[in-house]
Image 1 (tube, rainbow, N blue to C red):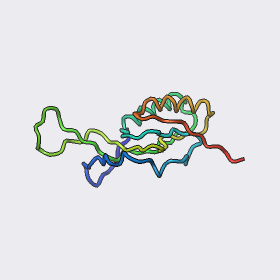
Image 2: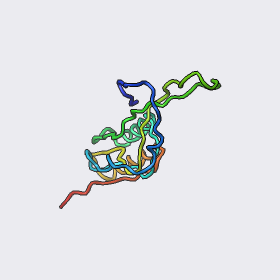
Image 3: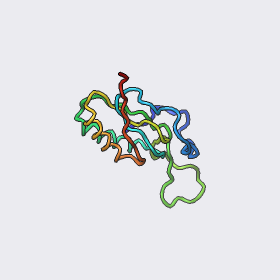
Image 4: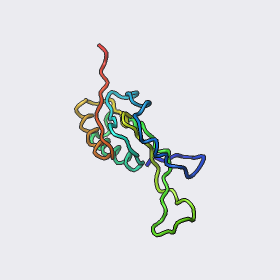
Length: 140
């Protein structure tokens, strides 16, 4: 699973205020010719990214190339069950990233559009937000 090699601080705030608004960066296809774009916002964990990536690569049978655009940088902590109030912040459970509406999550290239659409649909089912498939149209 994806996780940062090194962090300046081991624990940090969740920044839940960042859920609001639409994405201004990462909204256009940059690498591939077809991609999966979020239409609703939310928090995306490393485990969810990995589940979607596995569904994607299983469907395309390692043909073509896949790019994963978001990276889970934010550590999310959780206190153990039945721990009393106080006694500090909990330990790091997983890493997550905030996805705003309009962000590209996956990009693909090197296979037919029909196969890519099927694979991206399967990957979208693994994610906790609604998604749509976007295609780069060549200028003729």
